[in-house]
Image (cartoon, rainbow, N blue to C red; front, side):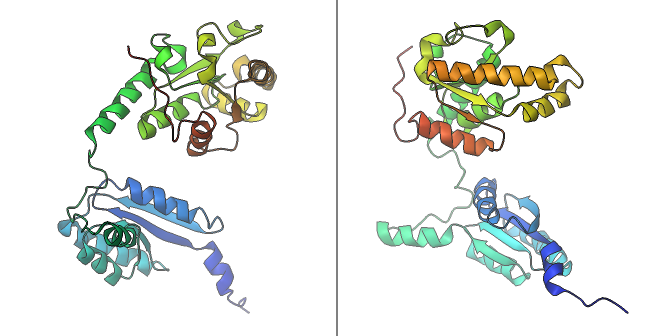
Length: 288
């Protein structure tokens, strides 16, 4: 005799199709959409990003939505589209369209007494060229100063991330540079830096801009094993030693630090911005 059908269980295990659709790069749709989806950890999502959508691309996208709907469950579309006609056509394809920007634009129009531009693709245009070039300079600075490769111009750094190898220095550095235009360097703590009473010589003059990263010894060992399996570098004993020394150093030198073990790059960057007072009041940089 067949078991009774449990609709609730079926819904809980089903994978819901999600589309991030934009007339530009899709970055805004992905960022805001994923922030909303994170509130439903018990639901599985199959995500697709469709950037640069225009009238020519709608037919193909409608067909994709119809196929996704046929698989069970209306596809969810997170949209940053200026064209209301395109949004309507996606909804007609059986999708649940969540317009991430239009409602806010209407509110702004009412407040500012002006009509929003209808030109597609301007959410991620160059916009402020000064800001764009600042981000590019920041990325160049991050590459030059990755892993302690250069001590040049550290006086201009907004943040210097200090940590043992494989604690998340480089991805956090690049994220802060690309998204916030900050000049970020990072320095790896190695056996040569211990024993010491203070910060390593190259970063010691800039202690007020240093921020430390740590993690758990087990997590560090797992990450290092992916790079150098069965090495002393990846051993639990070595990782335990390095984490203990690093955290002792942070406490002795009074620099703020956090653990990367359970945090995303975005979360770590937000903590660094707040702790270093960089979010609302960027540090004045000396003139080269």
